[in-house]
Length: 192
Image (cartoon, rainbow, N blue to C red):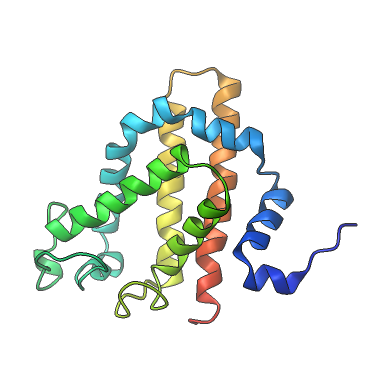
């Protein structure tokens, strides 16, 4: 039986990532599958981003988080939910972030900097980072991750690849998204 320093899991993102990756079996082969999916996923990223934002803006509970000024955004903000559209400049700003997130998943090395990135993706949606006024409830973050997971699986199922590669690619992204979801959830333990 392997010993795990559980206190480190709560304080050290790298230790947390290493434990999760080992426990669920997210390893070099999975990373290679994710990175080698770039020729298929890359051209589809804009479509995945659009689908995600159409879904986010179709519910007031998720859309309301895009009315306050987003961290790093300098343009006009929507006065209220009724004026918020998928074409609003602030939504475009957020779409650009999601676009970069997908590119990071397929294009970055899975090293300590990537672990920090996965962690900040979780923290940025809480008052702990970015705009103190933005506090996306965990249920909505889980809903977002579900939408992203579904969109990725749907996309992968349409790629011109053999069935074995398709299955292994879906499994690799699934493991990664579970790790990402944990890096989101960890920042809600002190918020709730």
